[in-house]
Length: 68
Image 1 (cartoon, rainbow, N blue to C red):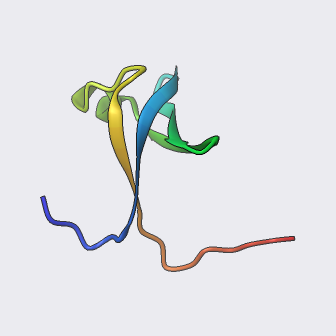
Image 2 (image 1 turned 90 degrees about the vertical axis):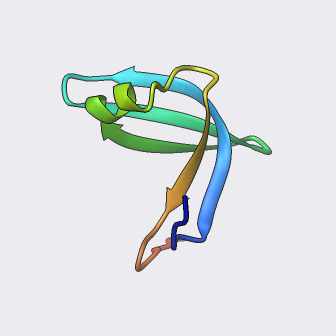
């Protein structure tokens, strides 16, 4: 699959919290860092995600805000 997004972080699913409509998926990307994604429950099932699944988080954004 080809994709234009260049920000890709590979890791393992370490936590899944499933609601009625959405699911929170936490991915350990190494170095003590984790990234969280909110996806639909339908996508969770279609991707067959489970604890330990290896995934790639693809980040595409026109702006990233930082605050100190």
